[in-house]
Length: 396
Image (cartoon, rainbow, N blue to C red; front, side, top):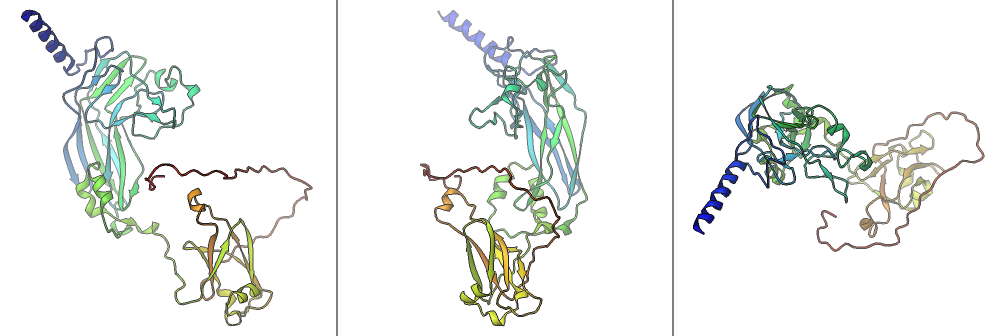
């Protein structure tokens, strides 16, 4: 009995050692050659990271990979996974790069040494039946019709004699997260040719990134009272050490300052429908405006901090007279169903002594009169409202 137990133990240890061996160029990774899960002991990692104000460089060092019982590739250190529905599900490296103010980005990649393995099957990305999104993955999935998939596979990915993904790297356009300007960089060190049943992985990828046309004058320091977003990003940004010197918002994208009517009488106008509204001398007089001592050419309107244009019907003098009026386009409140329980009208503000914003007038073009026309109206009355059983109101 002791010999039998020892024999079984030795066989189990030998099988485990075999499963953990790194992939060689001539090693088959087919599902037939591996039974059960094969979890690698190493991981992909960034090495030799060099930062400067003009750019950065680093190496993405490759490692062994494995295959689980569902033909999903396992590659520790690669935190992303392709998410195109029906295409091979492959792990990739994803990170964020912070840019100097106003700078662009140029990326140079060396031609890595590719190690190849034969593999009969790579599981395609499946669709989430509830939301239509792909799982697993972290990238936005393009819309793919379910009817376009053949046995769950996208023909454009599985019927071409080419590596997928096509490119070794991809990077996004610059974007802002609060006052941090960055790009998302994706590196695909593992690629697959479904026709040749060939899986390739890079043993090392060297990346050189140059920051172009940096201009600190285009950035403006943003006020910050807490840095929770920065703390959350710090572990995902490759050059976070450079963040503090480069944080700021673009001056050209700053919101226009709103001149609030301080120290003057302001009149509240409530609107509960989409229409063109007319407010004249008599209405403003009834509301309490000193209509005989104002300049009608100085009316200003505001809606949620934004100027509202209007048309003034009257003569060009500086006296507001009976019969003169202004008209503007107003609209009903467009909030959520929850907000509509408490807010029933939109609010516009009007006062004299401000800066007018007139609607441009254009000459109408004569046309042919019509007796009738066809229109489609969709009516969806909100007769039933149900409060969900949740206390996570910031998400719902």
